Length: 36
Image (cartoon, rainbow, N blue to C red; front, side):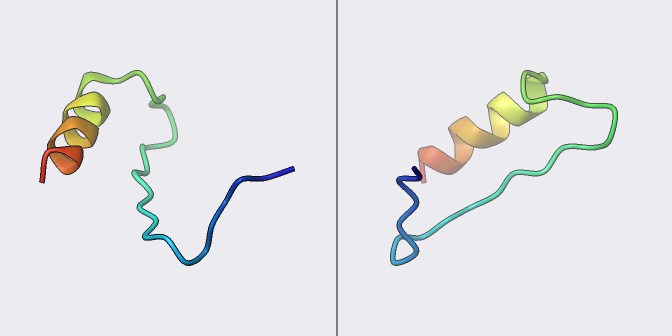
């Protein structure tokens, strides 16, 4: 089951091959985007 709603705006933040979702720049980018 997925709660994905195609009618809502979707943004993907993509990290590099050796990076992971806990990298500081990803957290900073996510926070900056959500504060727009």
